[in-house]
Length: 144
Image 1 (tube, rainbow, N blue to C red):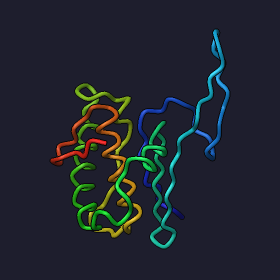
Image 2: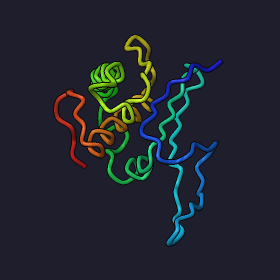
Image 3: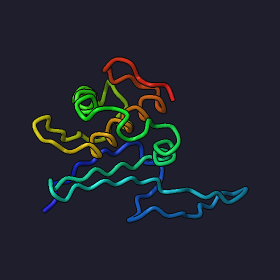
């Protein structure tokens, strides 16, 4: 049985099982919304990351540093800091926007999630901070 490891950001669209396009009716014209879902699974560790945020998938391809640019230990260190602050904000919905910080992230620093999972989480945190003008307090945030 897989233990879900979810990062859910602001949901502007309805979640679908796979990336697809939907037509949205507007009184003046029709628009196309893209369900931007990124999923990484590590079956050997029985963990998965699902990121649902419009724009992240294209940002990851176009602006994120390439894989292996950062070391795994660097990514793990940053992720521990970002996740701790994220979870702190989830616990304070009167102080921080609960639409941005919807649910806790279950990130255990004693588990080796592997490079890909850490890479994806780190880049989502960078994307999130730049896109939503947030600072999760782990030092320099690459402006992309």
